[in-house]
Image (tube, rainbow, N blue to C red):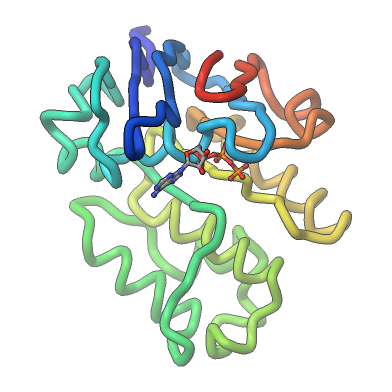
Length: 208
Ligand code: ATP
């Protein structure tokens, strides 16, 4: 099977400084791939270039068989993303958010099964403003799955969570792999990378 992600010589500069200075890696279909590195290493910038939130300054990016720099719309249909923090309108409920986000995609999973899978059924009709940090993170993961993605990109999904919530999220991520999904996970926790990832790239100061 062809790789799900190919990154070749990715460069992203902010004001003349290389935040990502020529990064290359590939992710095989069905694996959990970790991008491990300290604060400011360039993990988020790499993810944001892959998902089309930032324009790369150089390099080749291939996601799910598409040139991600030329075809960002096709890439977006096939991927799910949970960024470091997810802000939604304060009054929206998890059930409403899942329905609204689902309506953006050609194929989608129904809200009820996602609420169940990510243990949000009890909070389905609670306002976003009243959810705890862990519940918000689980909602972010559920939203990432709304379009039945082939690939999910999770940017530091467990940062700031208590140990129990972190363990629950680890189970969710392991289940993604069991369901046949490919996962790119960024983290600065060594033990998280060791536990979850099939392969890890260590990134520091914009270099692997
Ligand atoms: P963290 O673990 O703290 O989230 P990271 O590995 O995700 O870090 P990035 O957010 O990719 O790191 O940042 C890489 C470098 O690029 C840092 O030096 C950061 O200060 C810089 N940077 C990121 N975004 C911008 C921006 N919009 N403008 C200027 N510099 C930026």
